[in-house]
Image (cartoon, rainbow, N blue to C red; front, side):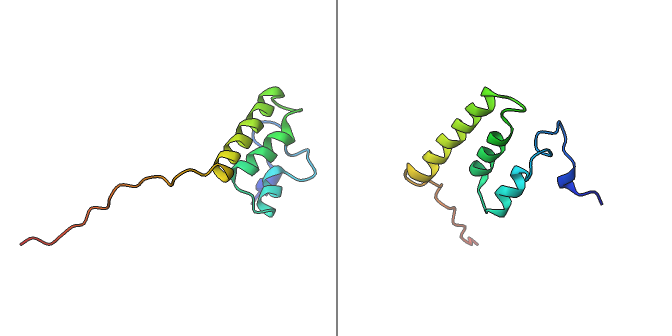
Length: 86
């Protein structure tokens, strides 16, 4: 079986790093937003430049919203209670 970390689809911008963003994020138990930030900051010079920097900013804004501007919990629908009618 081929090591999936030795293969990259669509370029070399991660394979050329000393440690791939996915390995770093996984080893440090990071969530999705943190992992995305690591991913985009690691590749912006080799891939999408300012677009990747804007993505980083977007994920930081999401992280701030989710972690520090907690709002009321999402309202869930009232559960349906089934009764046994004969």
